[in-house]
Length: 297
Image 1: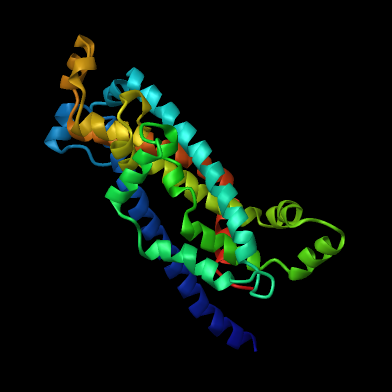
Image 2: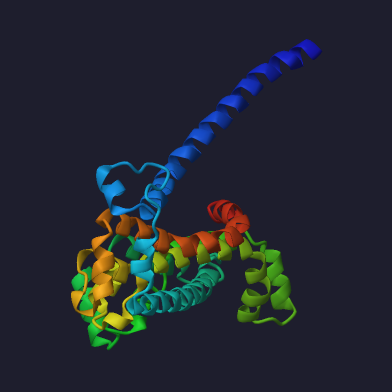
């Protein structure tokens, strides 16, 4: 018996070793480009242009960050992105919760549930297009305001599907008991469904935050005032359409010492850093939220 267990454990150990090595290699493949980006962002122009920078900075300098961070327009864009991310995530979660709760019920409790579900789901397959959306935002008087960045995507359907499936895993007995005790549907949602759905809510909140923080295209087409553009749109304009009229002599001198590649890499680090700081606080909910939200109970 012991010999059998020993023979079985050998293949298991080989598999575990192989699995660990494979995961380490995959992790290295994911981390290596990011390390390279950090190294390039802290390297001087000569070393970057010569191609000497790999995974360690050469000619250490923070000029790229100095150029981006010392401009007033950068801080204005940062405030806009922060406001957009906070407001947008709150609006997304509010509408997702209010929509997913009734759609998670069966047809006997919500007449026409299937029709309502398809009404929302069809928007994932067919959209109005960029020009109709632009005309709609303009005629509603939202253009050049923070709401033009939030309201067009106020109800993300993919996240709605995740929350809907998660709500279906909540035992119906909990809701029935609350309704018998006189609780309204709104109170049942807030005091029963929301507390037990924290993993899914945290996961969806992270998705919404990342989407709002990384968005740049809507800022380019809906926002005309430079002081109202979000951070990602501003960082794009720094590289592709830099406003030379606002640059001082010191800015010109600093720009001459930078390579385009260093500036782009510094832009990537600045854009990614806030999400990297938030993710560890939501990590414990992330996996459980995805798994439970993808399985119908």
